[in-house]
Length: 237
Image (cartoon, rainbow, N blue to C red; front, side):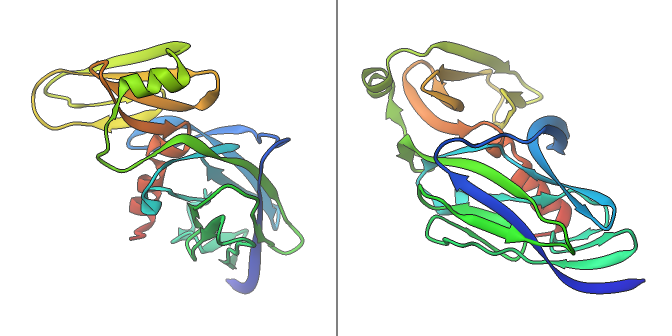
């Protein structure tokens, strides 16, 4: 087996407008298929998919540790997302951020979104390179983990939703997926999960509880649960 210490360069531009979306892929997250975006990097004749949440990310959570998502290299021969094998050659993968104040990236390819702006994560594998563009915006609210916002505040600022989606969770299976977002609850009482949708924020799901409080704002794709799945699959803590 050959071993080449060739730095892989992933190029990601977080921009404000004019971003094009790569093809959509499906990967497993919490045992169900969910839609993620994929970009393809060709390494030594092998097409390596890089999975991520989508072409837009909106900051809605105050806790930075809740804004961490991987650029996941979808190969079976993958050690912690930084050592991979392509066509019999082992490559060390490295990630860099041009603007850590906007979004940093660690050795495992986990990005932490920090603020609006433009950042470039780059990599190179032999003569191969790729660009992934993501629009990063600030959401209408930045909520703490257990913060509850009166629904009146939402309606006064955004109006009533353009549409709603919902599902009901019943014992004994107290878990569900709504609009690709995974939810799990304790207890035995039925729980209705409701998302409000606004045309102004097409990639956000506003989770409303009992038509009285806003309990969370979720990003389409990014918050589907794949980040936790990748950590578990690759034993990244």
